[in-house]
Length: 181
Image (cartoon, rainbow, N blue to C red; front, side, top):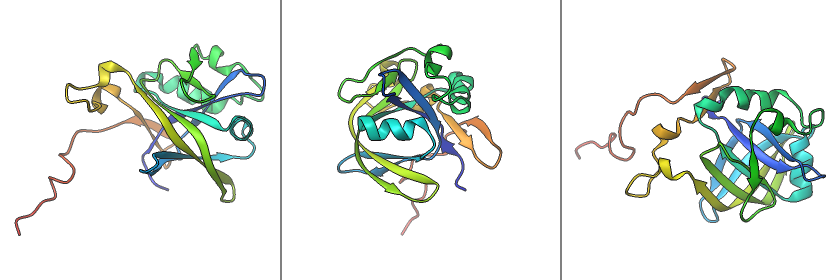
């Protein structure tokens, strides 16, 4: 298993329009042009049904302060508790470009339109084309880049079944590995 993995919330609407979210760690960027994100979902999950019905989802990136809420949303099925976001105390609003909810306390959100899916066995890989990215302005540096340290994103470590924070900055990619030629 790869570790750590990002712990995010996949937002969808239930058939009746109730906002739903599931915790996911099996999520990744999978294309630059068009920009796409993928998420692996079991067919037994309500989110699986919602993705097929609505054709859209959001990838909500929570900060570490939401760790208990992220865990709750992974423990509780929307099939049994259809209003689990409300019970978690997490307000939502409609995404701007897709038919999916945005979790307001998440400071980075990608709005995705379902592009394709691939059945892989226990999970189906849903690929969403990113149509919009929302970033809380408190995270944006003067040069327009995102300060991940201020976001304080959650990581999930499969081998430990624990959530963790990111560690110390080790240096600039494409720089620290340079050697004199």
